[in-house]
Image (tube, rainbow, N blue to C red; front, side):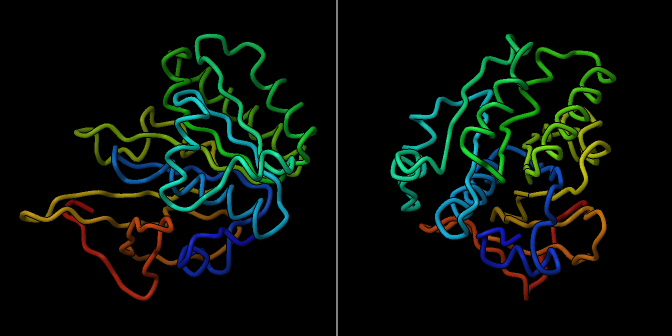
Length: 228
């Protein structure tokens, strides 16, 4: 499955594996939501793969407004029935999976973004329960033949942990870690495929940029981040 993110398919050895749950994780400011939204938008616009965005944090109007800076017209895709938003309060989580499943069926979606699993942890305090919830989510999405990205945030000072609660990476099929670290007086962005179930992948850190058109991964170059 083509990601729609220049350079990302190359470090994934061809593209995003279908019907997997891919964890996108990193500290604040790395562009995790941008990456996930670019995956959805490109799928709906360029590859005839309809998309659903489940947000536990930002409302859809704000997300769509942010997308305009990259030239992504989400409103147009919504009117065509190719893109749908679900905004859900993480404190009212009981029926969210039913709503997600019905929306996926209604839109005929094959791409899903969940932003973020970190917000779910505010409601589900027990790590075992959170792990079970993510596993059930993965099972539902796989049954619906969806490829999904879930966002998790790394809290500064918790490294080398690669997710907020330390369970997300074990339930996910694949993991992409995004770094935003300062070297001397300059902040640098780098991306690493931590694991990719069923496929080989680049073992290196690769620099990436957030441009006016979205994220671009420099798959031909190697990045160096302190502490990695």
